[in-house]
Length: 192
Image (tube, rainbow, N blue to C red):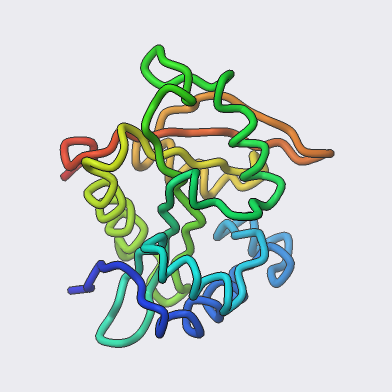
């Protein structure tokens, strides 16, 4: 499968919103969430368009059909962050990457990541991860994601599959999140 991994454009926003909505936590059954993972947050057409215009989204494009998307943006560009992103930003001094507080490190927020159901198991998530690592090279030392701990599928993909390193946890209400990081730069891609 030959996909084009590229930065999203504003014109991709409707297709990205549709993909995001179809894989949102609230749109899936408990069994679907357990089997395929899920995304959360309020990412409608306007939010996704704004993120694309700031260069904060990568997509996997299959000749005009959106196979997946991945957010990758600077913490400074996290305008009006939702609670998990705000908690991650607040935890920068207590999270460490290679012995340094995250606050003293150049880093990018990695995620959300979502792959269309028709493309799962075909390397799209790995392709997006590889594109993100390359896009982050020179901009950051590390890409940092948070994964709700009940999202075992996302944990397996990112930690077990891509080798992202656990950095700590935080809790918002009754929801626990793990924070993971991956070094930026092409040499950081396992199996590449």
